[in-house]
Image (cartoon, rainbow, N blue to C red):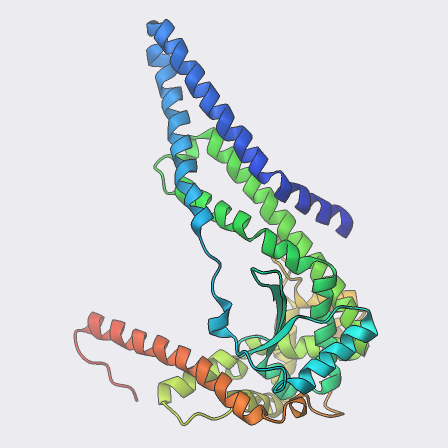
Length: 374
């Protein structure tokens, strides 16, 4: 199925979702009233029709409970992002604007930094376009490779991906709330009306995931055009395969800092150091493990092998690709990088310290005695 057809199907399912629910609810309400009148006129049918009336009323109650999703507020992203002035991020803004001009893309309204991402984009509630750059990408990549990643992310703005995501947010919340309330009721699987709703949700989820995968492939093409397929593939490997090696994961490094209560240092620099020290055989094993993963129906991103193939790079070629290290480092764009890195480090280590303290408290409750750290 072509990306255009998938995108149109996704749009149609989103547009007609609430009319579908409205038609279903009104139909159930009308049928319940009609059956109630019929029972009043023909009491002998009471034993036959009352269970059906009860089923309709029961389903309507579940829809009413799920309507609380409308009051749900989006999570506050500001807690996980570092917002600095344009002056402090001047070099990064200049690079982003240069990439946008070269690729015919529009620059974001604001750039923010975060610890737990390579890079991503989104639209806030006011429709402002936000680019979030990750500490690891800035600490480890050259400016040329970072430019390719930025081209990938900005293309999501141009394609309307972020606007679609923002507009569909409440639909997703409503679907999740509706599913939760319906599936927590006893004998829900005996209600055919619930299965109709669930089938619509299933179709929506499949279309959404397929559309998201197409968007990622198209964004990868922007990155290839910006830096070439070899550099784009190498950067993809570098940012994807890290999770396959526990000692290289940022979360594991942060957890070790939190557990030992070490002096705060640059965990991004530590991650880069560990990556450069990994043996070639361990790196190839991690790459092969990641390449064996297959893309699932509900995956919002294609797996590594599929993304490399779309870039025109075979698995064998990818294993021979070194990460781009020539040229000025991305961190040179930010004269105050060391201080910024410290702020990001404090943020992510504090999170894992809280999590570690909670685990210790739970263990103490279970064991009935204090748990001491090594």
